[in-house]
Structure formats: structure tokens, C-alpha cells
Image 1: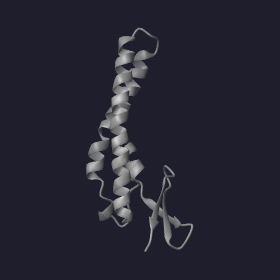
Image 2: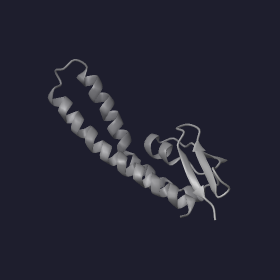
Image 3: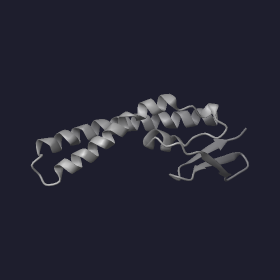
Image 4: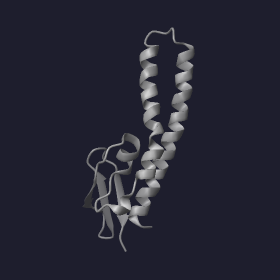
Length: 115
């Protein structure tokens, strides 16, 4: 499989996971709102709402992710999950047939199989 296609596939998985996480966060927010008299509940709700809003943006980020149009691709994890543009850096692979690409920010690694 083409490396750029593999990055796009990984980005799709991350966007899907963020969508599922958003549903879980929404449930947790509703649970906390029903018990809003607990100390610190408002602060926790605020944090969860910010996380849910970030998760909502993951699908939009996925739609904009185009690793095939860049000389050095953005890290799928950093872009989809955090909305940050961090380039993957080539690293020496385990063999000549494998090229590793690593994100210096989140330390994710992706293998490009040559040949």
C-alpha cells in the first residue's frame, strides 16, 4: 500500500475514534450536569465540553488532511487529534526496505515499506 494512502487510512481511524470519544464525553457531561451540586462539577464539565468540542473538529480536520500533496507529510495523530501541523521526520528503518517516519512532537511512528 502506498505510504500516503496508509497515512490517510490512519487519519480516518483517528477521526472515527475521536467521534466515538465525543459521544462518550457527551454522556459524561450529561451525567455530571445531573449532579451539578457536587464540588468541582462545573470545572470538570467545562473541561469535558472543551474536549468534546475538540473531538467534533476531528472530522473537519480529516476532510482537510492531504498527505499526498506535501513533500513531508503532517503527523496524522497531531493533526486529527490536536489540530497541530507537525511534520513527520524520516528515520532509519529496521531494513533497507523499510523507512520509518516519526513525529518529534507526539513520538508516533509510521512505516513506509519500499518496493
